Image (cartoon, rainbow, N blue to C red; front, top):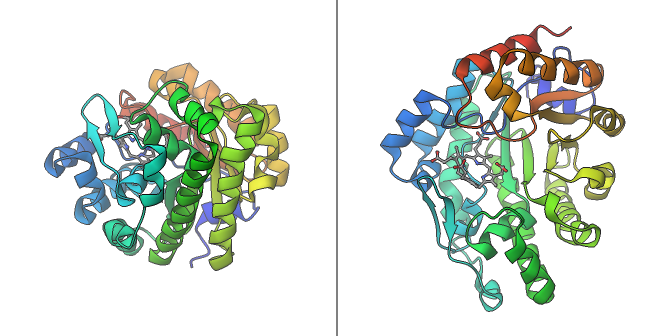
Length: 342
Ligand code: CP3
């Protein structure tokens, strides 16, 4: 592996200045070239499972902005789909799934799991050969809790009340669901690594709605299990955990799960981020709406992060995914600001 993949250096504890830079959801609707490919693809899932087109959209932000890392184009909800659940994406409505009942959990999975995900592995293989040597390739999955919230509610909600209630009313079935998801997510990440991913990230977008006991049981433990299984096979591949909204729980998350890098959402104070950096690399945490606004709001946000965190291992990123209304000129301005840092 080339020595010049700077994101890997940072995850192994090195300070690199200017820091490596990429954006969550960097291939997406704010790019006209993405919208054009998306029109040719048919449904959103067709795009995720079409290696020709998935490679094309993954490379678009790399070609345009020269980011230091490329993230596989797919979605966290290919997991329930590959496990045999009905998953659709409807224009303007987001994901729609058939809600799972407690009695259906035992039937999840089966022999077709990796066969269903083969197009994703093929996309990763092709990406590693097409990307510049110095660009880090990131594979990913959703964390069991976050994937479970969509499987139970059948759609996005603001507080994940359906999944929380299910977890309290049907604790045995719910823990069984998390276990199925953790085991299959670990197997999925291992295959992505074996196909060429240099780093993997676990997205736990809904960590922020849980009480302390549930955070430990539903977020920490399943992610720790994934880390344990992936490390058992690939001890040297860095794993980034992104428990969005984890707030006061961020402090112990890295130690308890064993993740290498910690993704921070934009509400994490930079003083806290600096403390978290003592234990390893952090990634984040620009408010995506500063990137929408541009100008001084953007410059101040970038500057504050680089001042507070730039002298320790940092991967510059947004605190959540880029939104479709973001002007491309603002992304270009952010790249310039970050790359000017010394
Ligand atoms: O970061 C990247 O560029 C890689 C691709 C990626 C997508 N989704 C593409 C996508 C990644 C890493 C994800 C992760 C994902 N998907 C998460 C975790 C991160 C987060 O955003 O919190 C979640 C919760 C999902 C589930 C999901 N997928 C939702 C809720 C939606 C609808 C919301 C929306 O923006 O429309 C999606 C659709 C989706 N996934 C799009 C993209 C580019 C937009 C759909 C389209 O192009 O039609």
